Length: 210
Image 1 (cartoon, helix red, strand yellow):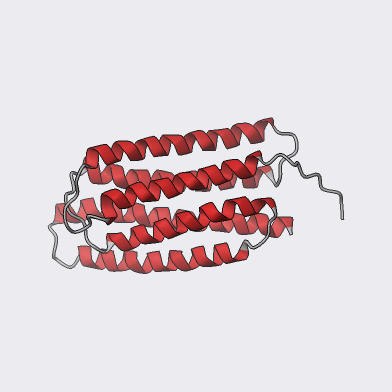
Image 2 (cartoon, rainbow, N blue to C red; image 1 turned 30 degrees about the vertical axis):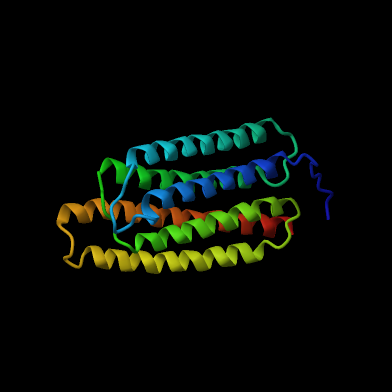
């Protein structure tokens, strides 16, 4: 087996952990706006949307730091393409969550189906798991449980999404409300799917490095 050089610099692992922690923050803000008040009326959407925008900007800065680091580093801890992909996948999750919050604000939605809280619970759990997993990239140990659990959460999210779409088209809502709420529901589903992309990338990295 050829000798592989591994840098001792922990910066990449720290940056990926920082990126995942932004997702925990984003999921918390999302729950603040949508989860705790779903079905009962939304409040302070402008302030919370601004807070989410700040969180998304902070996540972007971390992503840019990862890209700058990989572009200026001769020896990386694993394949450059995988670093780019993982950074992009993490960034996608935050982008979808931010778009969901912004859509609630822009559409002036004051009520949402209670089931949306289930989507947010999936996102919060996935975010926490991802934040706990990123430091383990340094040793490449005990990672399988992560992508297995994220896959299970994604399946749960799919089921919730199908129930929400069925409810939206049940005749309970007027056509304009259906269009607005479906946009939010679909963005939350996209965020859940993006977590699965993160997990798939982690799995690919682990397989290559094993």
